[in-house]
Image (tube, rainbow, N blue to C red; front, side):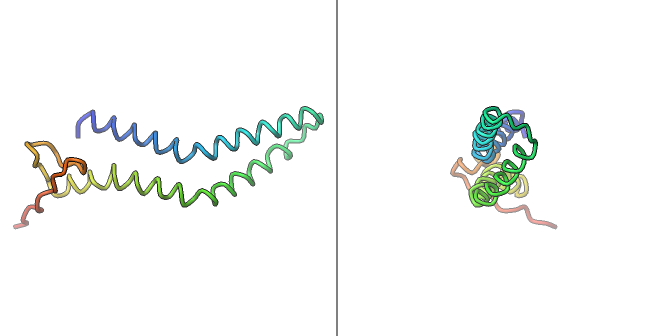
Length: 115
């Protein structure tokens, strides 16, 4: 595995993380701002007023967005991790010496015979 492959895996990992956590973080930021404005207007400085709705919202959003997040993780694992593991496992060095990649159109060779 070259440095370019490692950088590509890290880049796609970060993008997947942002796509998964982005909706929850954005909604939490909006709710936090609304609660802060409400507390400033009413001069209520109760910590539970700020914390309890946020915790409940994170829990609810996590349950609501679980299929989406699971789909993102499954897609990431299949495209980035599983295909590389298969390529290493079968020793696929076709395509003019380049390692097997799913987008190359070259199927991995047969597994070496065990003697």
